[in-house]
Image (cartoon, rainbow, N blue to C red):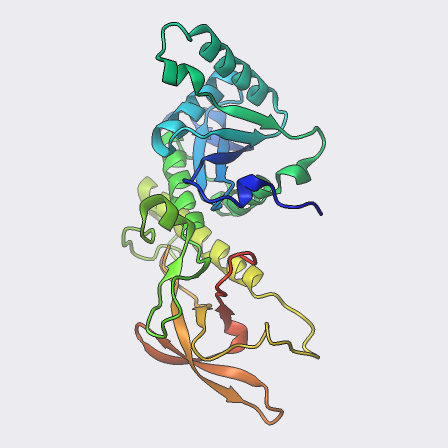
Length: 319
């Protein structure tokens, strides 16, 4: 395994260095009502190389023009990146050529500052997807559960764009590490902090997972898919943070300490709501190893087994 590139290590503004990939297709309808036809739609994923922030866009097709418009929407919302890393897809190569030709041909009309600035595209070698593991993992996080929670639901382009934006917020709300070592501080750092300066939140909505889809309006069906995605993805994310090892030995890095910020694995939690707390007390067994902890949360103290707690370490390398 090689060393991390400098784009992953040097601090800078979010989305200065971007990884880019497409996923899909998704089946959508071209309009509501009778006579609607199924058409294909794709997911375009932008991931920040420094902070792993995710930006999702719905794309109508895999043409050069569609990619250029998608890239313009991304630049309008997140700012122009310095460099873009992607694979050798034909739409990416064509988009790079058009952007480069536009900048070269417009040097006279554009200002000197704009003419000298461009977006540098870096293409990974062919048949080497492991060179782009950071955006491949982002595609997996978004697409794996989206395909399963959508099922046979056929959304419109507007509804799918709304769902992508909600999924983007879910992915950017994941806890990375504690913000401080204070025992009374339950705040955590997330990729959303680098985008809006505070944790991402969702509008309060009633729980719709137990409701039948055919009894809901179209907007309620979309919210049902959103809640289903949240429940499946957050459980998988917590399971990945809890690195399972053989239980024969224990090291200092695995041992939970009083004052550690932990993520509680809870069921039926609203979207974008992560329940965190500080370890207040440990209960060792007859062998001297603690398997139960008392955790102080914003809603009081609770006792949980350690298998339901996920510690957030000060470093984000493991997240």
